[in-house]
Length: 67
Image (tube, rainbow, N blue to C red; front, side, top):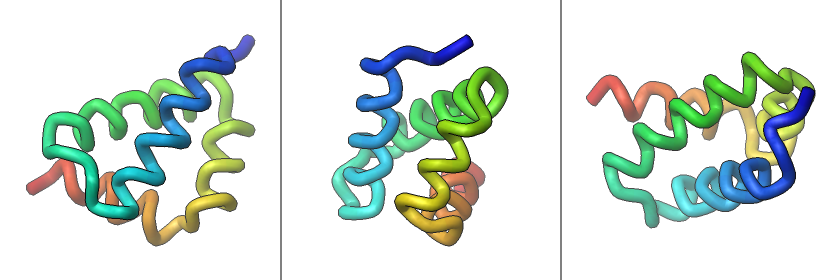
């Protein structure tokens, strides 16, 4: 089971934009949801995003939604 190529590309691009400060609060919340979905459906993709972008950036993103 896979989340699909397009969704993977979208998540990766959104993480990149988050790191560069180009995501709105609504987009950040959507990204948190997409990451949770990806982690549940395809854990290997989630792990690859953590490796690529760093666990600290993923942690910051998840804490961002609490604000």
